[in-house]
Structures are given as structure tokens and as C-alpha cells.
Amino acid sequence: MNFVADLHIHSYLSRATSKQMNLENLYKWAQLKGITVIGTGDFTHPKWYAELQDKLEPAEPGLFRLKEEFCVEADREVPDSCRSTVRFVLSAEISTIYRKNDGTRKIHSIILAPDLPAAGKLNAALQEVGNLKADGRPILGLDCKLLLQKALDASPDNVLIPAHIWTPHFSVFGAASGFDSLEDCFDELTPQIFALETGLSSDPPMNWTLSQLDDYVLVSNSDAHSPSKLAREANLFSCELSYYEMMRALREKDQQGFLGTLEFFPEEGKYHYDGHRACKVCLTPEETRAHEGRCPQCGRSVTIGVMHRVSALADRQKGFRTKHAFGFESLIPLVEILSEIHGVGVGSKKVTNAYMQLLERFGSELFILRSLPVKELEQGATLLLAQAIQKVRDRQISVSPGYDGEYGRVQVFEPEERQAGNVQLSLF
Ligand SMILES: [Zn+2]
Ligand SMILES: [Zn+2]
Image (cartoon, rainbow, N blue to C red; front, side):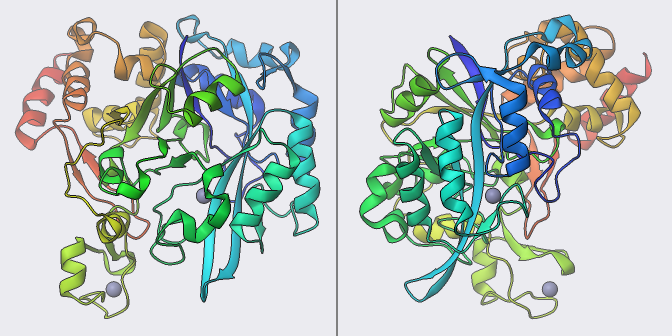
């Protein structure tokens, strides 16, 4: 069975996260998006853990379903065209801050667990280290390697995946507080790591320029803090619905069981290039070097982005493709495409209505973006959308890169195309 899995998300109990991130909405939005397996996020939080105990029930091995009684209301808001199976996998993200090798390290890790006891046992161990109640993504003064050890002690089937490995401030390779190699972080436990989350600001080809990553499978997740951001990045599996089968496919880099990832255009990520947000200064790695790491406006140090960091650690030329590379598809969220077509904000009523109408008519968002024959859109009011989706599939779009926490801006249409489009649009 082919299915999409988004394994890193946050509940409403994480800081700066939408109140809408509860299990019912995750269940509903997974269907709207076209996700089959979704991470619960935040299982380390006692309140969320209690909700998981209360509202989920075991389904296939290592996976859970929302109990029927909690589905009823959510199902009313899912169009028939999108109705599908949703399974949950227990997931959490932990922020570790500690000193190692003369540096302060700040690293985020995703933990996946096969069952509630495996998650609960880890929670009990982490409770000794710090406060799990303060944040759905707890901050612990714990060596990341010890976190891995504790996760494995709690259950050998628990899995640690280094999160968004290139983000400057909170990742294993981050420019500000990471390491230069996985071995520096995990020492003799490094072989326990088999997957790395590439994050929004990098894509597989960027990661292929580092031979030290060849042995790892690259995964992608949305890290969503609100329902509409789910599946902006995700994983494509082709195996039985089972936690153990999914992990086996990743561990063994099984090209039959794991097909690759759905990706943001990395330029759209908010740390792709270097820069200083307060001065609206965005710099390429070369420009940063020419300015000796200083903002040309104010003289402060710029935030070193993902591209810069990747190129600093790369030992291969750009464009290199590893032999066992998995496939990937780059997507732009449907609301962003609709926003550009209609010339109004992504959160506007017009975009929201158009979005829901499209889903009702054709199916889930990922189906529309990835698989819907554009022919079906080439009539009436959706002609421009057909062109836009084809352009994204052909990678014929432009993006002004993100930097220092500012998202990049995607442009599907050139100004002349948009003008021609507006004429067509005005006909409807
Ligand atoms: Zn994180
Ligand atoms: Zn500045």
C-alpha cells in the first residue's frame, strides 16, 4: 500500500502552536491533506499523553486510530472526496541544550515510539531530567546522545531522528550550536541513527553533497504548528500499515518500502540563505564571506543559513547524485498557489473557499498537487490553476530565498503570464 506519512508535528500544548492542534482536527486535516499516518507530536507532555490514552486505540502494529466517538463530528467536515484512513504514530520532539567539546549545543530530536508503555517509560526517565509540563516540546539540559540512550533503554523499538538537521540554532549540524559530524554528537551510539530529517530549508540534492550522509535515509516532515501546514513536507511509504514495517523500510533503506519525500522548495524555507532580518538583508553564502559575516547595513553578525552551512561541510560538487538516492517531489502548498492566482492573502475567505471547493470536487490537497491530471482543471475558472500546478510539477517557478527566520517568497507566474491570466480569470 502506498501512503503518505507526516511524522513531526506539534499539539496545542507546544509553544507558538495553534489551539486547533487537537486530535480531532489532526484526524480531519490529515484527510483534507491526504496523509495516512500522522505523528501525534508532544507525547512527552503529561496532558497530551493522557489525551492520547483517552482518545486513541491500537490499530495496526505500532499504529493508532482515533476512537469512533471522536471521529463523528470531524467526519462531518471532511468532504466524501477526501474520506480516508488515518492512523497515528506516537511522536515527540525534544530540545536538548548542553555543553560538549567546548561548545554550547542546542539540538532538536524527533522520537517515535511503537506503543504507549514505550513512550511512557521514556517520559518517566525524562521527568527526572527536567520539566515536561512547561512545553509540548520540552527543553532539557541533557546530552543528545544520552537522550538517544534513554529512548533505547525505554524500548529498543523507539527511534530517534535528528530533526531539521541544518537549521542554524537548533540542530545537529546547525551553524550556531551544532556539530560537524554525527559522530561528534552521538559517539559510539551513531550506528543507532539511520534517518535524518532534512528540514524545510534543505532538499535531498543539497544533502547529497555530503558523503558523510550517504548511509542515512533522508526524511521530511511538516513540523506543523497549525493544521493547514500539515504535509507541507512528508514521506512516501509503500509498505504495510505498520510502525515496524515503516521503520524497517527506513532502517534498511528499502527502495520498495520507502519511496522518498515530498519537499518544500528549499529556497522557501526561512533559513535558506544568510542574512539579517531586522535590516531586510539577505545574502548568499559568497556575499556573506565577502562581508566577513557582517550585515552590510548595521555591522552585526548575520545569521548563517542552511545553504552556507551545507556548502561549508560538503565534500562534493553541487549536482552530485548519490547512487542509492531516494526520489523526491517539490510542492508548493495549494493555498499559496490560490493566493497568487487571486491576488489575495493565503488566509483570505476567497482562498479558503476556493480551497474547500477544489477538495470537494477533486480530492485531497496532495492528490490535487501531485496526481490530478491537469486536463481536468483546464476548463472554466480553474484554467490558471491547471497551468500553475503544471509549472510546479515542472519546477518552472521562481523563489526569492528565505533568510534569518523570514520565509522565502514563491512566484509561480511571471508578471506577463499573470497579466494574461488575469484576462482569462476575468472571464469567470
Ligand atoms: Zn524543532
Ligand atoms: Zn543588519
